Image (cartoon, rainbow, N blue to C red; front, side, top):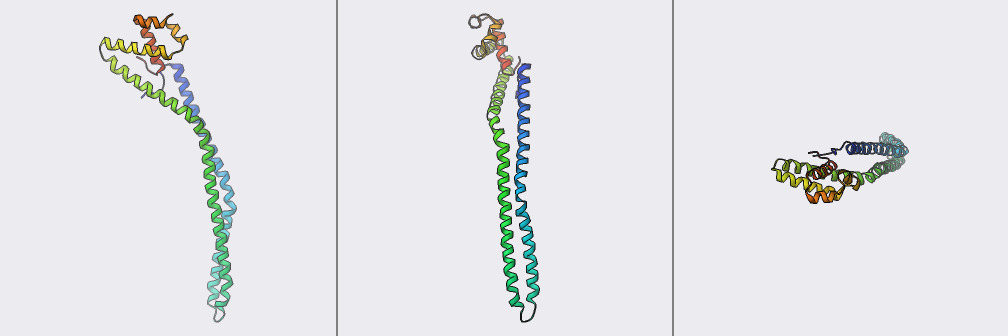
Length: 208
């Protein structure tokens, strides 16, 4: 698999692009974690309420159990304590619900902060890199297969990539090779065809 171009300038640009994408991803991941933690702090009152109400409910039930053992009047006195314990349980449940809701909100905010900017760049960067890797890998396989063959197959390979260069490369690069690259390809100028093919191969990340 060919990850980077053979041409030094393009390889440097690709490396820089990948490093910037990784840095961008890391920065927004950190920002997402920070946003998650910041929103999660809003759950502190609910957590405190849940813990305090739970403790109060437990203490009220302890008192209720002790009073229940008092002869004659125990059953009558336990009613208010049981009611207050139930109310405390309800308050603790409300605090737990608030903590759960804030936790879900914190997760959603953290993912949104981290993923949205990363995906906006990834939808452009990743397909371009995947397209280059696939094209370069296919070109490398073709070069290896046909370079091992006879001279006619090697010549056909050069003509094929020279034709691709005529279709894909900027005019200024083609003109730097020969004044009339189309005529050179049509006339079978071996030197010009080889230089055109090498130009396309370098763009695909491959050297002969």
